[in-house]
Length: 209
Image 1: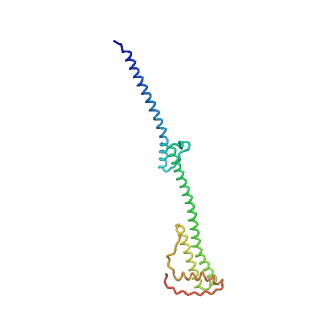
Image 2: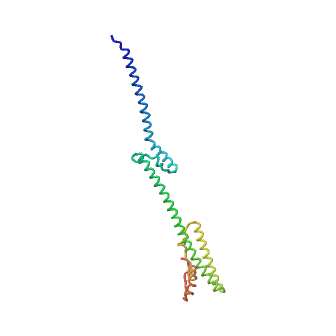
């Protein structure tokens, strides 16, 4: 007969030691694995936070110091996000520059239009004033000149109203009548006199067209 008590006890101690070592290794591996996974997912968390900020209307690039190496897949992903942010910023700056240029161009066109639309009535009123000064004793000439000045002022008022409403004044659809052709005669008469030209005028238009 052999006494196996010591062998059995040693075997039990060995089994418990192996189990304890296995548990310790498992715990260490679990901690190491958690650390590795957390390290791997850290760039994803940065990207998630950046995208959440972008969703709130604020695009901010990820600092270069926080970017993984370029050989890393996550590093390339985050750099692509930063490139997108830079492109969006550049697009906004370009849009602002184009908006400023468009505003300047619109103001230039508006100034040109106003100058053109005001210059003609002013020229007519100057011609009417010249006529009234030359033929001040002729009531008909004075009345005609005053009428032209009144129409010129009314046209300038329309230009001012259109300018204030930021719309180009257009009169392409306005009917023309005999008084409009008479205005042309009054505008041409001073220049004809200065050029010693005899101006003959005959208008048979009865209705506006």
